[in-house]
Length: 177
Image 1 (cartoon, rainbow, N blue to C red):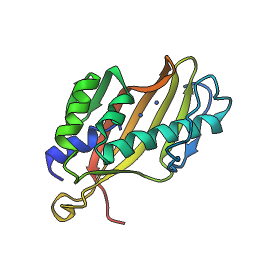
Image 2: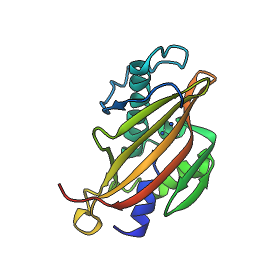
Image 3: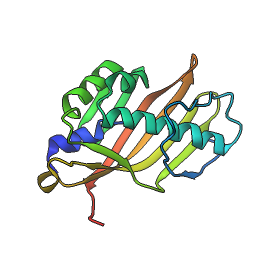
């Protein structure tokens, strides 16, 4: 995989610890589904449903270059740490990076089934951890499939869920299945 594509597949968020842990499978939530507020979350199943829906919304926007939706899910002071691409600070810079590097139509993020773990963070939101793959449908033969791990810190504040911190690491070529 080319360095630029390694960087771009890390430029996603891509989204988050004391109460609970689980493994959630990412199922696409219907767009009209309401995502629970932090106060409405009463158990691990509620948390899994909310954060999985947020992950789906974030990466549907990423995969379809819906920059308005993508941007709306980022905190103004988002911090994005990428093991190979370095640090990107701020919502505007991260959204611009996605526009310049992902909106080519040749990068698609897919969550690795069974890899998602979600942890409650009292009074703040949630920690989301998992593994995702990056497919390159137009240039698969030359770019291959990449894989990496991620951690997203989601905050619920002022009636909205936002990604505040991202760690994107362990980038490597994915083994063919």
